[in-house]
Length: 134
Image (tube, rainbow, N blue to C red; front, side, top):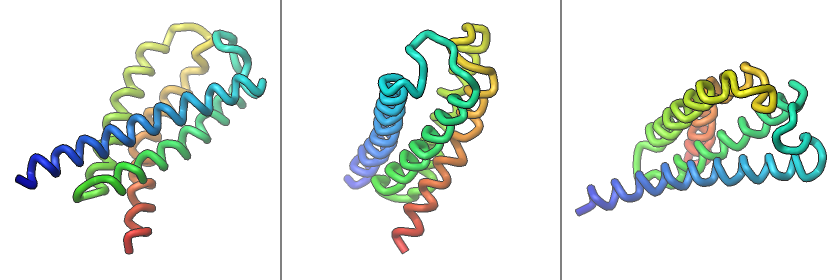
């Protein structure tokens, strides 16, 4: 009976991390646009602003890995790395879809950097969760 329960908790952990990362990323983006730090949607943005976006998305990714690890019923690092793998796949799809989509989608390095940081941020978040457990 505990195996279906653990599966539900595993899925819940992954879903919670995914939803948290998406909501926090969208909220941070909206805040940056509404305060004028980022230009209006659809307009090109300088590389320096993409570095800022990468910085806060890195922090959000670490939080997502932490959250997944905290909620996971067992093997927190494995769950967090699975969430990072899912993020890597989604980011890789973003690389392909935005590659020639225009300057409003940013420089090519940005979606590549998002993909490249998916696993390390998930690992870092899970590592922090493990340190807090001990």
